[in-house]
Image (cartoon, rainbow, N blue to C red; front, side):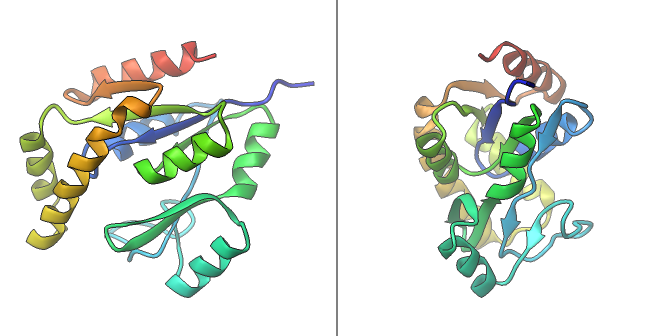
Length: 185
């Protein structure tokens, strides 16, 4: 019988480069990157079912009440959650699964599934994080300020993670991420 896959949870402040690093993992044959559900509107170029499952708030909350998410949380005014069924299916097939989720959700996963390995991605500095958020050109000043306030709180939680890496250079950070995942027991 094939060994069960490992569950990795990647978190960090908005704009830290989680999506870029996790996107680079999608090319690996033995890793499945989970698709989260969200109530936020799609950004330009995002596709339902590939980037997120876009749901209205009522449908999302109904699924949450029915236990359809491993974790879910409200973040910056929108709900995000990880559908349980696909994650379990891949782990049972011996495929490693990566969740890219925020800190509240990561801690929920660790509580429910203690074997999960939590990986925190941090920015080189808050100034660099702010520059990245502004560079997106998708956020209002109010949204940027809210994301930076949230980032400060999230950075305080990094000690609860199994592994932390600084994303100051995406290629170096990716190499470090892959190395940790390969060595994680």
